Length: 217
Image (cartoon, rainbow, N blue to C red; front, side):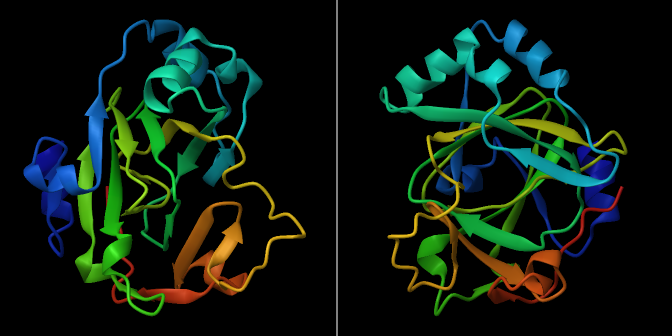
């Protein structure tokens, strides 16, 4: 799969999570007792096209795995556990939070990563990103400095992804939040978009410059 995917995407190199480059952006996690959680994640809805993000899913949040994630990875802070499922293939945007994000995938996917510390005037070159093939059943923790966005599918089946964040991240901004930063779109959610993206058409700041990379399958 890796070699085939790389051959179809010759304009950029696709790294593995075992490559040292991955360490700048995230780390791979190993947690036990995941069978029930995997079954619950596979039962979440799959859209026919595009993707759907649900920040908080009660079934997922009631799992023992969610308690483990809260206590072991987020230091006991309240968290929300949801999912991002669907069919997407382009970079389109990069977002970032001030807090870490846990992702767990039922299918192989490609993620594009960047580093918020390399941004300048709310701009980032797509050529400065790195693409990583994340194998199915891999759980990763993204650092708060990591630019990221929705996964890109590597098969026609699409993907299902469990997403765990500090409670409230990605929720609507409170009225008392002084939104002086045009890239702040939701609570602890900053985003820059590529000009070709739907998000740019909806008014997101166009700050992602260069080729809007696509994962071809």
